[in-house]
Image (tube, one colour):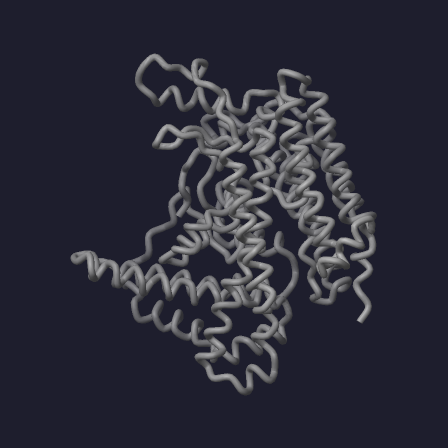
Amino acid sequence: MAEPAFKTTGSKWLLPVSELLGFPLDQVNFLACQLFALCAAFWFRLYLSPRHANPLVRHAVATLLGIAFLIFCFGWYSAHILTVVFANYLIIINSDINNVHKYSMLTAMGYLTVCQVSRVFIFNYGILSTDFSGPLMIVTQKITTLAFQLHDGMCKKPEQLTSEQKLMAINVRPSLIEYLSYNLNFLSILVGPCSNYKDYTDFIEGRHISRRLRLHSGTCNGQNGYDKTPEPSPTDSVCRKLLVCSGCMLFFLTVTRSLPIKYNVDPDFVSRASFLTRLTYAFFSIQAARPKFYFAWTLADAVNNAAGYGFLGMDENGKPSWDLISNLNIIGIETATSFKTFIDNWNIRTGIWLKTVCYDRAPKHRLALTFILSALWHGVYPGYYFTFLTAIPITVAARAVRKSVRHLFLGSRVLKSGYDILTWAATQFAICYTVMPFLLLAVDDTLVYYRSMYFHVHIISILAAVALHRRHKPREPSASSAPCSAQCQPVHSNNNDKVD
């Protein structure tokens, strides 16, 4: 079968490396750019620091490198990303500021949706790990985040904003170079994550670390102010994250490739293997699929840290934390004993984006509206919607079980340990069942998988939710709560407010 045309639109310079290693050229190009970005990030921090270069130069270099990465990886497909960025800048500077957030949301999400629909026909479910829709999705988050924060700063009174919205509000339209740098910088152009505009401009202009040290000093006793504290180095954080990346890559090469997801719907396997065998393979194949996401997100985090971006503040032990824009918590994911805990630690920045632009602002039906936005942002592959819809009864059932059963196990350490082990296993199998359609994508494959599993998680979840349903009216979700999906979940925000 001929390869999709997309694979030939990027640079072919590394084709010999691709053939030697046996990896698709698009993946080799992506990895090469991220490794180059890592080296460039160190150079950017050490030799193009705010002490050595003015913000204009830093903005320009970050932008030009980002555009070069796009063209190298995606060829003419990069025009889609550049088009939506420039179109939304015209909206930012020309439209009525009272409606700028609405116009930007409609334009960015509309263009993304058109591209997602085209993507289905181009790839015919043969999704590539590095196709152009990934950067386009990240750029969509950035465009809409900036537009809403600009609207907050220029149209709303302080008393109309939450504390976080006040902190991130923008009261001046960005210049073209600032806008391009925020959206297209080489640190996050390929895999994100999305960050706040103010955080990014603080980083470019040299205020990023000092501002957060100042916040930390305000909570400390004594005379040691932030100005007397040496600027922390990200080297330890970068090395630690690169070590995690190395482990994930090794796992991928030795385990992941030997447990393909598609084998879950192989006709011979489905017809001949027992239910327990199919369940076991599904569990381990999903577990094996995670490290590729761990690798991409952790490497992106390391790239930002290497440039001096991502400083969160000092932790409870007085040590610097570089997790401001981290997209996942691997330990939290692998040890999760509830569906919510799992999704609170997965794709963190997307969850914050959903909360920022939709959930906190919708006057009513915010759960439904946030769910719809999450689904549209991911794309139009049917498997995505199977995943989102399956997550609903599982979440309801998990809440019902926790409210009705958990307190019975808290009187004894042994009982509590047993409960934690049981809920860990249940959570991991539920996640496996839920995200399988997300990876299979197609309707036919999803239905084959569900039938092979006898729809057992759907049935158990619905029965549990009905059996444990409380007669009293459920409490209304608080202003800080938001819905969850398999890929987009509200979690810790930049000011450490947690979303339930």
